[in-house]
Amino acid sequence: MNFRQLDLNLLRVLAAIHRAGSVTGAARALSLSQSATSNALARLRHFFGDDLFVRSPTGLQHTRLCAQVAPAVVAHLLSLEAVVTGVEDFDPQQSRSTWRLSLSDLGEMLFLPRLTAALRQRAPHTRVTNISVAGAAVAGALEAREIDCAVGILEPRQRGIHAERLFREQYVAITCKGWKPPSGRRGRALTQAQLAGASLAVAAPTATFHSSVEDMLVGLKLADRVVLRARHFGALPELVTTSDLLAIVPAMYAASLPNVQDWELPFAPHYDVRLVWHASTARDPGQQWLRALLRELFGRE
Image (tube, rainbow, N blue to C red; front, side, top):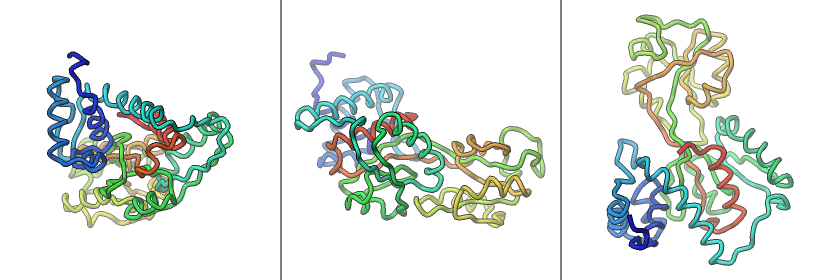
């Protein structure tokens, strides 16, 4: 490929699709028509000789080449934007900013310790506050600058809201160490029949809209196997270690728990954990620094 033949404007489209996870979302972020954005993607595919993004049941998935190229493009565009607009540098060592995040209860347990440790080293005078915002209200809170960004199972579609996938996750089951499937052979994964013989516990946090576990159980005709619904994931580990219950939780959470047995659920849904922010903060150097830190700590793309 000849770099001189590349229209650099197309790189903005590549970065936007990578952030939004869809052509429609990228078009909205760039104030372009969907047809113009689709045409730009076609030109990018021709230049790179690669599909870059492929369709899946959960939306656009990037190819291996795109995973290598897009993050570098995003980083360089942000740097170029900072130079062109003449914004002042952000000095994390001197900053006294207060970061306002929105994390679910599970996000607080999984993300806040690592983030706080990094901030204490790199931006020691800053402070961080986790503000509970229901998923449906995240866009409004971002627009009102009540929060700087949100991380979670979020799919914002409002104009002016930017989103970038940090990683893809799926659900697993956890039980006490001595638990055995009620039927069939014991392995790393549970079958639908084995799940049907278990007594289930699920959590329904309000900080995100996500009903895929309930939807899965309804689809498998197992909704009646749920004997406990908790408001927070934090209650589930002790519940399973002191009873015969089987809880369904995110794999990342299960990996952090001692004294539980985790089981794969091949039929469980996948979902995307996204970093979400408002367009009005796109050029703010401090906000850019914070988002870069979140990508570094938690991005698995």
